[in-house]
Image 1: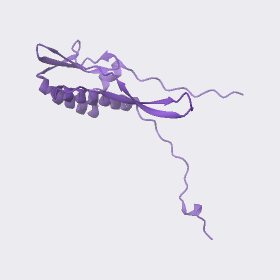
Image 2: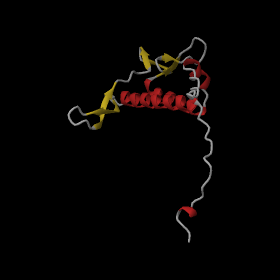
Image 3: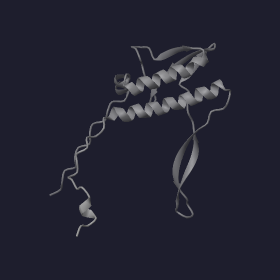
Image 4: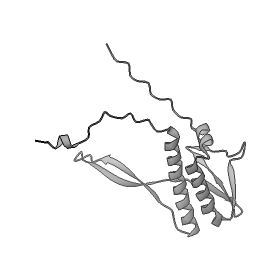
Length: 150
């Protein structure tokens, strides 16, 4: 008589290599660039930009956890000087220098901002900015295994 468990293929757990930390940094930067792109599109359409984040809070009366949507402040990475726009790429609070001593990207008209941001997103996806990202926020060392108590 066969059992249901005998129909399953059982193996030893395979070792899964940890993902490189640069992948998480790339994804975070792409998320921030997507926010900037949404902000620019609102600017071009003369609409206000609002960004939200989900936050889990505990109700003081019932003790129940709820997810609440809260507004968050997003600072623009672009700026203008007499209707000529520039864009700065940021990692955390630091501005990323694409060349030595050159951190701003000359955009020109505000209508060109979406193209510049989309180009930056593609460059981050391909890993072209990995060295610049790692210079501003180096990878944290791997945590050492805890020593077992005897």
